[in-house]
Length: 79
Image (cartoon, rainbow, N blue to C red; front, side, top):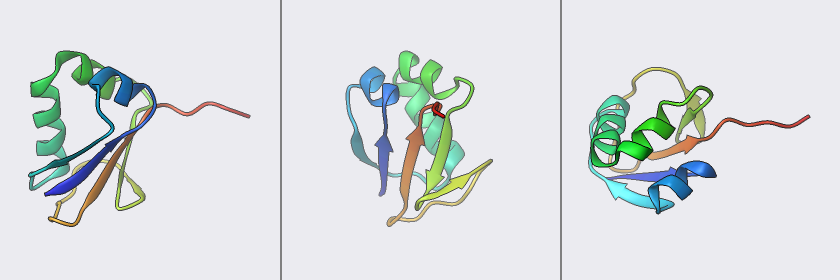
């Protein structure tokens, strides 16, 4: 099972910060999360949300293993 982390507003919307979820790919994982909670789905699809797989930003799909760590990161601001 992949370890899934939500940060910032995403964890506030979901009501959790860390979960273990079985999924083969990043796309399937995101679809599963979106299917469980419409509010989280909207938040995950917001502009600027990024995904880190094993602490590296990933764009597009990627395979997951039982040891994968997937972090959903809200838009960053600062200066």
